[in-house]
Amino acid sequence: MQNELLEKAYEISLKSLRECYSDHGIIAGKRKFDDYWARDALFAVLGSLAVNDQSIVRSTLNLFLNHQNTKGQLPRRIDRTYVGLKYAGIKIKRKSLSPRYTNSLFLAKSLDQNSLFVIAVLSYIKKTRDYEYLDRNFSKIKAAMDWNFLHYKNGLIYEGLFANWEDTVIKRGHILYTNVLNYGALMAFVDLCKLVNYNYSEYKEKAESLKELINERFWNGKYYKSWISKKEDIFCSAGNILAILYNIADEKKAVLIQKYIKSNLNGVSLPSSYPRHNLWRYPLPQHIKRTVDYHGGFSWLWLGCLNSIALLKMGMKKDAENSLNKIAEVIAKHETVYEVYSGDKAVNNLLFKSEAPFTWSAGLFVFAYNKLKEAS
Image (cartoon, rainbow, N blue to C red; front, side, top):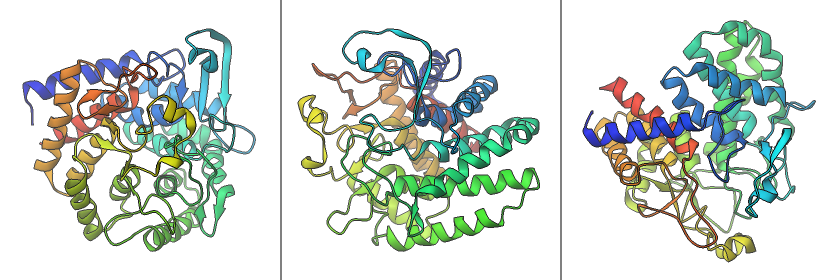
């Protein structure tokens, strides 16, 4: 698998990831995203664990646990700065950290961070065997898992507007990405329960029921649709790839998903959705900033990295290597890891500049590189 280009991209990605290690954990970026974003950090920790940066992972987990509210919800973001001022070009550091539990418009609670946290904890425990940490924090981890159940409707998580990572798209209801992550968290929690001899039967049953419902209600014969809607049938890259990784998709479905990706997307850095959502689903600010493609047309390296791992899991090692090599070309070309791309160019216009370094993609490239290296 090793080649000069891939090694260079790996070094750039690892440097980018470690540049975002901060006092209390992993920040999402160095410019506009220099706060603690749960989804960015909790995906990125996979890269940190791959290179044995265990202390920063533990600090990140502790940071979010320390700001867990009484109902068990973890924050979507923990601010180091006054974020509103930062987007106006004024960066002022806060005297103390400030957690945020709702989306940017305060319309709904964010619904993916608790699942990502439980999954990240299992990854940390598997890597470190830090069973003392699990014993000491198990009640809080359980509370984080149980919080998801407060948002069930007809057996699936039901979310409000802008409540998941595609937070520039106007949609609500039963969303694929959130429910797939919830399944991943349930299965991770079952494994954690086994380590502390806690009765996991309820969580196992909920996971089995959820898997059945996802396959029954989201699968359209070619892929899992982004959300349950009678009018729109959108492909969700994250939800479909994670469905392969978490064994929601059987072998036949996984092959069909990859066939769709190969036929309709470039298979390297992927858009969040395909085809792009209807223009009316993007709020006015996205039109003004010319970023209606942020969740739709622009491409994300972290999605391509996850798909490389999915291909490897499916036994398609050569395809996985080709995919990661093409991602490496983009990283090496720019000598950093950007947030979003248009083609192979970082998005950069008058009102929007792609974040760099971008921890989420850097961490997952480091993770994917090491996964493929282990398989070589």
